[in-house]
Length: 484
Image (spheres, rainbow, N blue to C red):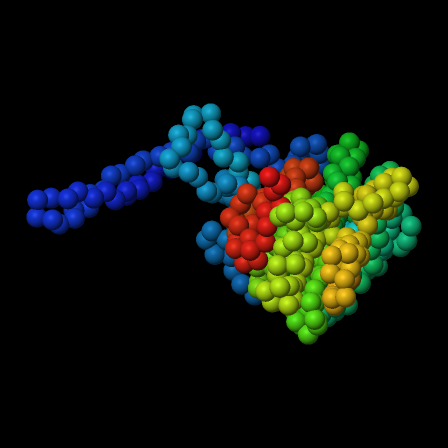
C-alpha cells in the first residue's frame, strides 16, 4: 500500500447565542479547522508487477481515435485520481496523526492501454445463482469491447467455472447479444461448484484468453482470487476481473451489488399479495420469505418501501417465539388491533432455531455453503401450532409466499440496467489499462477499482445499531426481541 499524505482544511461555523441588555439574541460563530491525514492508497495489481517490462507494450487508447467523439480534457483518469472509502467523520473527535483514510484508484479509461485489441481474446463467464442483470452485463461487455476498443475475439464460457475445461466457448458479437438485456437469467448458463483450479487455468492458457471477465458473488470471487494467484504464479499475460453479482447485496466495500434494486422492487409484489391475503381472512397472517442467507438487505429495504409489513426478521438479528416480548405475543396484539398481520423473513433468519438431524447439520451445497432449512415453512407450522394451543375454536389463516425464484429470474429494471452498463465499462477500462485481480464498483457513488482479495474477504451485513434498522423499527413498531 502506498501512503499518500494529503491535508484538507475546512471552515465550519458553529452558532452560539448571547443575550444582551436589550433582549436581542446575537449569534456569533466560531471557525474550526480540521485535517485528515494521511490517505492510504490501496495497491491495485497490474500486469507490470510480474510480467517483464520488455514483454509488455503499451499504446495510446483507441478512444483517442473514435469517429464518434473526441475525448475532452480530463476524460482520461490519471494514476492520482482516487476514491475515499470513508467520507463521514465526527468532527467532535480528535484526528490523531496516525489515523488514515483508505482510498482506491478511480475507475475509468486511461490514456494508454496494455492490450493490442487485434490480439485480444476475451472470455466472459457467469457463475453461481441467477440474478437480475446478468445478461445485461454480458451484453455490455461484448458491445463495449467491440465498439470502444475494437476487440473482435470475444467468447462466452458456458456453465460457470467448469465451462473452462468441459465445453467449447461460444463466440459473441454485438448482433448476437443485441436483445439479451431484455431477458432474465443468463444465456451463457451458470452452475455452482465445478471449481478445479488447474483445469480452469489450463483452459484459459490453452485457449489463449488474455482477458477474463468473471461475473459472480462472494463464492465466485473467492475462486477468482485463486485463479488470479495461479495466473500470477505462472506469469501469464492475462488480466482477470470479477464483476460483483449477488441478489442479497452481501458483497462488501461497494455501495451495492447489481440486481439488488430489481429484487427489492419484485419483492413488493409478494408483500402486496401477502397483505391482500391476510386482510381478506379472519385473523389472517401473510408470511413472505425473501432471499438473504447471511444478510437481510432485501427484507429490510422491501419492508421500508412497502409500509404493509408488521414485522421483519433478518439473519443479523436474533428473535424468539414464546414469552413476553416474543414474536407470538407481538402478532397476537396485532391481530387484536387489525385482525391481520404481514410478516417478512429473510431465508437465513432463525436457522439456529429450526430442529435438524445430524445429517442436515453437515449438509453442504455445490458451493460449499451450509444447506438452509425452510424458515418460512417452519414459521408457518409454529404459528399454526401456537394458535391451536392458545386459541382453540378460533380461526387463523397463514398464507406463505416464497417468491425466491420469481425474483431471481426476472430481467433487470432500469436502475440496475444502468448500473450493469457502468460496471461493465469500468471493468473493461481497467483491464485494457493492464490492471488485474480487481473488482469494479461504486464507493460513495464514485466508481473505483478494488483489489479482488479485499472484496472477497469482506461482507456487507446489516448493522442493527445503525439508523436504517431504526427506520425499520419505526415503520413496523416490532419488538427488539431483547430478553430482560
